Image (cartoon, rainbow, N blue to C red):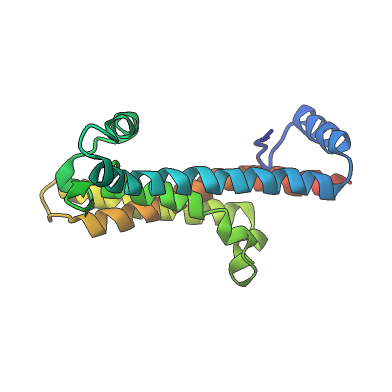
Length: 189
């Protein structure tokens, strides 16, 4: 269960959060629940990127009709233009370069809070993380806007990095709400 509570939580939200912490017991049990969710989050988003990258191998090994189901599933979350995708074994990824980077960025985001050497983000204030997320997402949005207006022609590697930056930005925009809820809940115990 994920609860999103901003800094200006109403008394009812604070009460609900304190009930959740009381339900889970001590802080350690609640922290394990959130860490389990983070592991699932990382596995899901990095798994999407890796699956999209392995579908060309699958098609090469087993022939053309095999693997088309995977491409059909990914067609719901990406346009899959072959000219904007990475190619392996003569076949395109199931996601374009920007979507591959975006899903990978959202998946890598939680690692920035738990890896000891780069754990600095977990000590940042809510507004600072939110501002960082907005800045990263803004930079990522510039790439397609400049390309649409004909100011330059983007290439797949640049699309991948703008997607990666955008995925991290999206993570930082959404994650601070959950983290501030946890900070509040842990301070209540």
